[in-house]
Image (tube, rainbow, N blue to C red; front, side, top):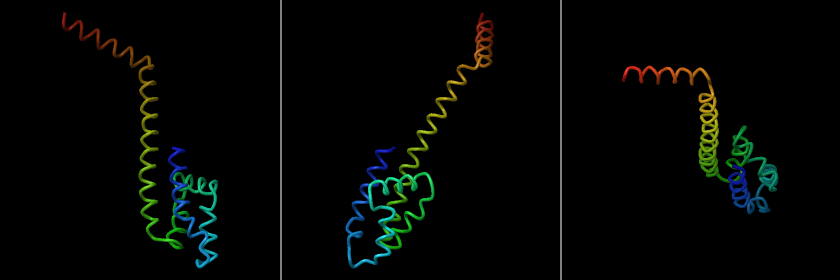
Length: 123
């Protein structure tokens, strides 16, 4: 997950590097973009915010100041990484539930009784 976030952050930061050094662009807008994507650590923090917290401000600063196409980038990123995280959490939940179910003595005793009853019916 960290590698995906670093890769996505570096890609977005690289795509924005020309805008941040463009002297013809509004300095206030350039600073707003720099505030979210200006350095590696700022970009990494922004990518964590996008995934786990409020993603709208980080997206809105790019839509308002750079290009509306960044909305598509964020939607794809949120869907891809969000579903990946959701699947991992779901897998961990199912695995821990299965361990608890297998270790549960009542379930084991009930299954043993069913097996014995099935065996007695056959005989």
